[in-house]
Every structure is written in structure tokens, then in C-alpha cells.
Amino acid sequence: MTHIQQAVELSQAECLHLLNETYVGRVVHTHNALPEVEPVSYVMVGTAALVRTAPGSPLANTLDQMIVAFEVDSVSSDLRDGWTVTGVGSADLVTDPQQYLTGRSLPPAWTHGDETSAFVRIRLQLVHGRRLSTRPAPVPAGADGVDSAPAAWLWTELA
Image (cartoon, rainbow, N blue to C red; front, side, top):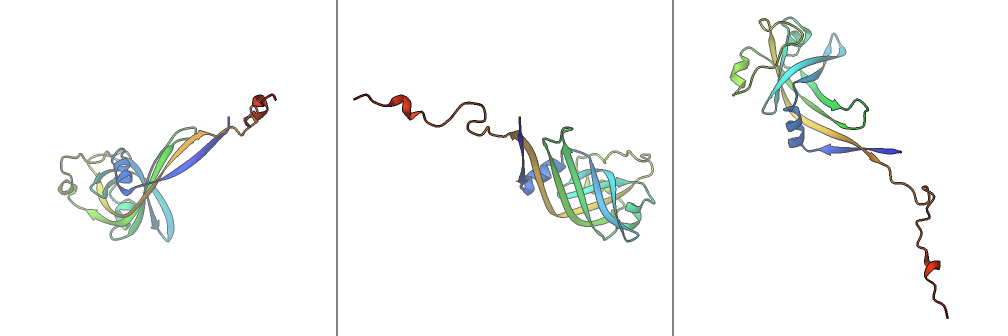
């Protein structure tokens, strides 16, 4: 069976909802004049992503006051369904992440220990996303061996 893949644009509200559903994303930034992509853990605080990273990491050392891209996605293993959300915004170092967390927990640390963490806030100013879905392609008339044209000849009247 043939399938058609379809991408549907998401609203900003849908994008922010999806960003709140997970806690692993990617920060795209420039390091030593080259593009770099870093997987990160994060938690959303309004329209900002609060990213946890290791002290001394390129994220902690170079992102303050930079414009970065932030990307999160979820795609099925057969690549037929999923979504992707990308945001762009300015990053700044955060010395007291608790001031932003109202009833939320800090993002988990998965590349270093909990005791030594640095935090970067990315204030997303542009957000867009797409939902991917796959549906069966319609079968063209006659492809299944049945002629779908009206059978007018069956209903001719006799004189």
C-alpha cells in the first residue's frame, strides 16, 4: 500500500504545548566560528526554555547574550508520524534558576552530576513547528481491477 506523508503547520500555542511535554532538546549555536548542536535537558518556563548544562561547557561559556536556535522533536521509528518544533531566541546565563520555577522542577542532569550545573535561559521569540502524519494513498480508479465509472449501460431502457 502506498502512503502519503503530510506536514501540517502548528500554531504557536500547539508548539508551546509540545515543548512542555518533553525534557530533551537541542541547542544550535556557534562555537569557534562553527555551528554546533548540543543535546540538552530543559524545562519550559512560559515561553523560555531553561536549559541545564555542565559548568565550563561551551553552552555555559559562550551563550550569554547570543541568539540561538532550540529544537525538539518526536518522530516514530518508521518515520511516518511525529512532530518537530523549532524556536529562536536570545540566551542568557542564569545564576538562580529557582527564581523562574514556579511549582516546576529543575530539568534533569544527564550529562553530568546534579551538584555542578550551569543554567541557560533561552527566551524564545520565534516558534514554529510541524506535525507529520502518514495516511494511505487513495487507490486510483481501476487500479483494483474494478471499473468505478458509472455503469450506465446496465440501466438502458427497452423500447
